[in-house]
Picture 1 (cartoon, one colour):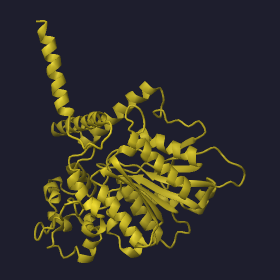
Picture 2 (picture 1 turned 135 degrees about the vertical axis):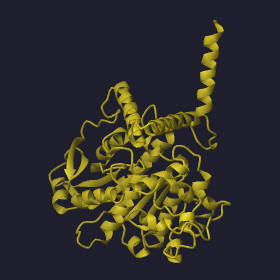
Picture 3 (picture 1 turned 120 degrees about the vertical axis):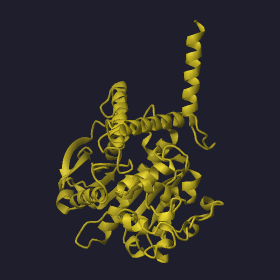
Picture 4 (picture 1 turned 90 degrees about the vertical axis):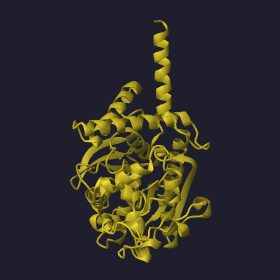
Length: 419
């Protein structure tokens, strides 16, 4: 009988290790920490899917509850309502901009007549998860406000499944237009020549799309000065770029998960996932996807050889001709900013684009940087050879990664020197 507890303990340990362990590239630092993080995320997704199948709750709602529960435990453990990110001099207000909930971070007031920077931030989470007010987003925006003397406005745009495209985009655009109005900038003592738009992942998608729309809106007297995009997701026509194939099983954003996020956002049938994974939705048979449009995301031309490696483009001759008609958002530049024409890109603000080697979205960001440069926009490309998707947000113990802290510092330094 004494042997039974030992056998059970060993068996459970082996089972957990088997579930958690996944092979990772040698360049990834702190691999077991990333495995544990990814194992927790996968467990939350599996549990949420089971609850959804049993009819208890929508699986996205369940995932939100799991992540919020974890954050609550961490807040109590750390003894801080913002997870250790409190900056004593920063004033935080939860208000509305044009009817859209936002959280405003104001640095300590300077001398009379002293103008401050402004930054609007859109959080990531696949247009379904995350919050402007919680976790690392709150801590990062407090840091930006404090260190850079910046009024930061973080937008709580609506999410799936409550809404679909274009609602999150329209929420962000409405908040941005309100923020850029001369009256609001004056109220917060912001220099109209020093206002940025920024976001990570799906938030980077929204930031790029909003920056494009603002740049071509002649009715607006104030434009964004810079756009800072953190591993943005920018297109949904090619899920077989080198980074999508290389990193298809890389934490914490697996290739099928990103495809599912897109289908959810565009209010499409989730059963289309298998077709998108093999690029059937963008076959040559689609006359609406013109050669000019294809050239805007032709990674065989837009990527440097070091990123193309030995991969070959996957171009399907004739399949699934109805998908694009069923899901028009696939070709909408408000959803896929990489598809914008050069005349639109040329009007955009100078850009900072952060990419990570071990991220399915790496090539989206790199292609956008190249297209912006080709259009005459000044671009800073900040690439992390040991980076993975989401690392920018992992800057607080126990979920802190050295690459995340370096990525955040690089972002802060660029804003310091360019905004």
